[in-house]
Length: 219
Image (cartoon, rainbow, N blue to C red; front, side):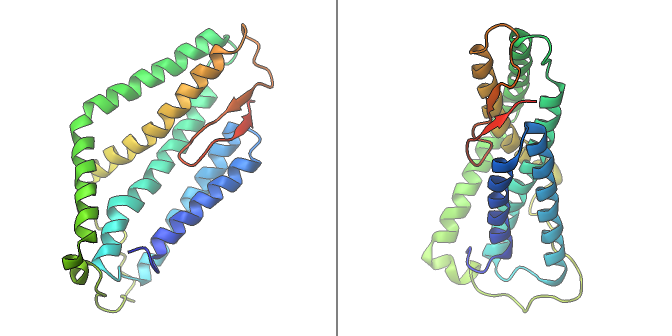
């Protein structure tokens, strides 16, 4: 399913770019801004590719809409929130105020998770069922056969969706909040180790932002 899949390999390249950015960023703001640029470039590449190439197999199409496109959207949401939340934190008010700030963010995300719990469980089961169906030998001829030659008429298939825009938005937001929840938890732990309001040049463990941990200086 992944062999010769442009979207899959472009997404893998984006994750490599995240690693490179993470190693060079001097601050969380810089990490978020540069990563957002990488996400937007990936989106442009997806749209450009789709103008001239149809999905070659049903498997490629389903992988794109059920996994890749949602993951890309979730990274965009994640980095936008990461930048805004970090920029707006009460960094001058001392560690207690900042801890309270991150706890409020956690409460907000937990409320969102609870509101959409049934949807998240349904989508998880749907994805597991999709993987099982795709892997079944009797379905290989259906999902992995090549369709008609790639279209060259400039009609993009990028925005075709097997389910609604609202569902896309909710699922991508759930994925973004899962990463942000981990980040907020790490900030609370970090601040619990800070004495008083002293946090100048404090090294922040960004932790797993969906791809791994790294030490980035706070500014």
